[in-house]
Image (cartoon, rainbow over all chains, first blue to last red; front, side, top):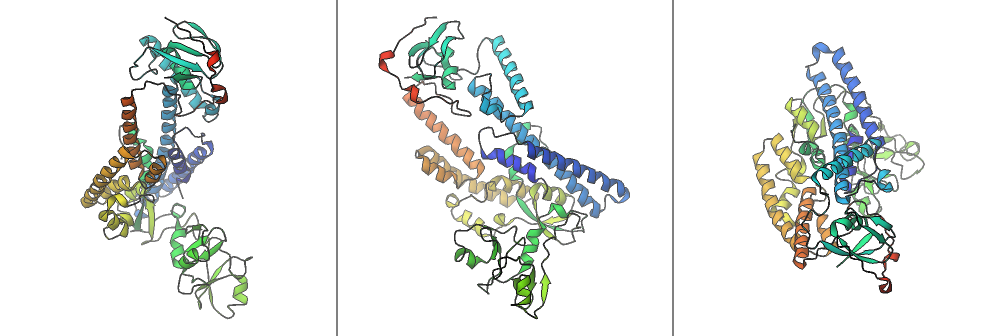
Length: 191
Length: 306
């Protein structure tokens, strides 16, 4: 059955909300299928140029053409959905670095895309003078109390202050400074 | 078919909805489409081998655990709890009497599937017809009047050029039991086998220019939506939620989750905690939970009035 590998790609990404492993084999299979079908399509059209609008040949060329189109569409949808999730990760983590367990799931191009996207976003944030990924909703207090659950040592915060974050200590810090650290799981917000 | 909005054009659900199989009949002899079509499936229905255990039933599926052909009675009695496949039926069914041999022929006298040994011993002097396993060779022309199931996207293209005639797929037919059940009580029906019922349905209704089908789907959706909205706003128990989600189409699942999330958010807002949560969304970065236990003695409080 045609388009099998391409459809598997789409189904695979539908099953999960996170970013699955980059499925190199299936993409190569789909591209290979496109190339093979394209060759055959050309051959049929060249050999039967005069009769190509006869139903006997027309059904063949129409089918091959739509299968090629379909394959392409599935692969593009797969890649597009992955890029969407990578962008989402950048926004929700507020972090310009890829953790290792995520990095090994991406292809080279996607890693490149992530760093470019990160660069764009950071440039824009600097120009605006505001980290857009922090606090999409207006906060109630400017300062929050946090407990350190991961040893960090001396840290320079965004606002310029230096603080020593030792394990199990609690601090009263500026919200915008620490929200990234909290979402990464290094600190815990105490209410 | 082409949309200028990339998001719609490359939408995952839209692509999967177009996989809905539509029965098509070829109006002309078609050129070399053999590998495209699951011909095996079609041939399966022409096998008509009787079941050895229950002579009144035909063999309809293959038991994956035992590699045997089974009928509907065998499925529930002899092969209880096994898994079955109806797709690869004429591939490698082993003979019930001689487990070392595959069934290769059909005995015309008894309508039973037989292996090489059966042919010589049990069915002596009967006549046989060969079961050909390799019917789906890549370069077969499709004969006129062949009936096959094609996915929507292909059926659409071929039907527009009048190369095939199309039929409405079973679950959308007026008299089909699934449609009747939906009509009777839309909210009780499990959609687990039709994850894209509504979105495929709208596509199909435009292919057949069937306005009634559209109205029918709209009607069903309205009733189901009320039910989903109610459940999403009241249910708190996670096991109940997963149970309910299992019976929904993909679109309804998304709807349910959105509604549920907005209600949870509203509850949280009422309590008005402003807590920054650890981000579990995509990739939680491992934290050492044991060391997170705080010891009150060590507490320090630093205030940075910056």
